[in-house]
Length: 176
Image (cartoon, rainbow, N blue to C red; front, side, top):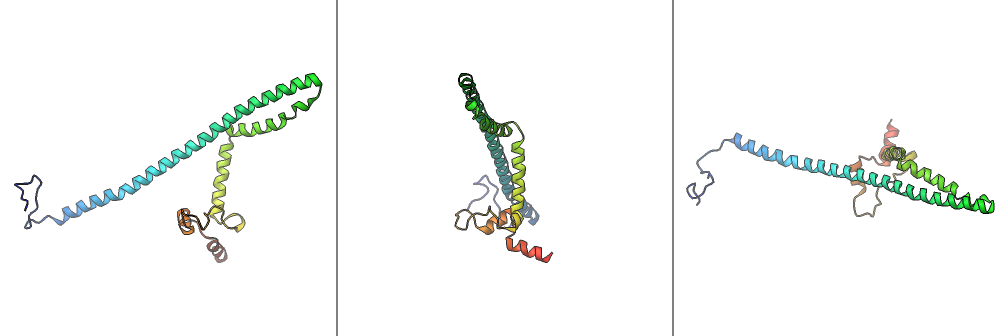
């Protein structure tokens, strides 16, 4: 038997009565601390996901800018070769590849320096909203994982994204 003389920790005797209020307060403190841990973890996960998304978008723009530099160099070489060919032979056939190269370069420039990324993100948001409402024209949703996937069931997916099934959407339309 450990007594308070042999142990530096305060020992509770069987005859001493702790007030219920102090015990209840201690339980609430532990409960509040335990409740805040999952919320902090979820907030940290959201922050990490947002940082990862920003990094992905920055890499996409950086790749577009790099591709634009390479296409600019290729376009310059084609223009130079076409001009030399034009001067030597008098034929403008060597300048024909400048058409597609210029078109593709303008497309990539729009992604690298224009507002294409904002337009694509806005369109992606519209598509996600449309899919969550039941798909275009009431067709089956395209983003639900296949039935034989090992990650998530259809009901779990619907619960995460608050998706109503097509049957539920049709029933709601009929009731309205």
